[in-house]
Image (cartoon, rainbow, N blue to C red; front, side):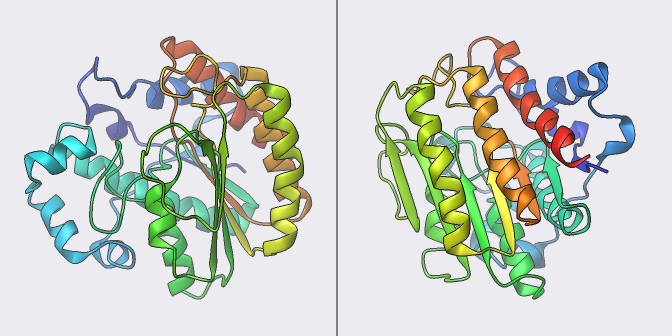
Length: 300
């Protein structure tokens, strides 16, 4: 059974109308239930992550600041979201959701967080709508528990996973791959194990030709015991923050290529949703829903 982390408290941490489209986190599960792709039993509500697990990745001083709501105005501006107790609770639940999904993936082959992909968060600071790096925390948890010893992070969000790259820059057990818009946020790129910067207006043909070769090659090279996949849909041609020109069908084909490669090699895989900022919420919802549909079709 496909297990999906989802908690309605995810949806109420940022005021409506904010440039970060929170409503997608409610609309995607609703659409999947409405169309019958998923049922209520597929969803589970994660608890907040405990501090000890956070400290496998994040600095104690930073976590204490979050717990006390003690970020400076400059730190809040860098974060890009209004600081609140509800926001911290949301981030902690999302992070535990990714950990839980990783454990479910070890049992069922794959699992999905209906949120997450907060790859701009560094060990010591928030950045770009990201407070806690959920994939980094989950990866470090698997390593610390000696559940796996070799992890591949496939980050196909349009923005470089700068926080993830920095966190794992000296960790040989984690290979970080980021395919992103070269001229997009963040201005300063960190060094992933492999970075591929795309030109503005990269179209379906160019993008999919790259992914079609890249994914099997990198899996064969790394031979991971576990894969985290960040499936951001901000590569869409409609995305206001993307600068890349991939269609909804092209984005769907990308997800199909990644999921098929994980499935046929029997590599446990955890998917987090990542970004999506198209002006029409229906475009974001449809692109994200396609990721779930593909997983359900291939695995279950």
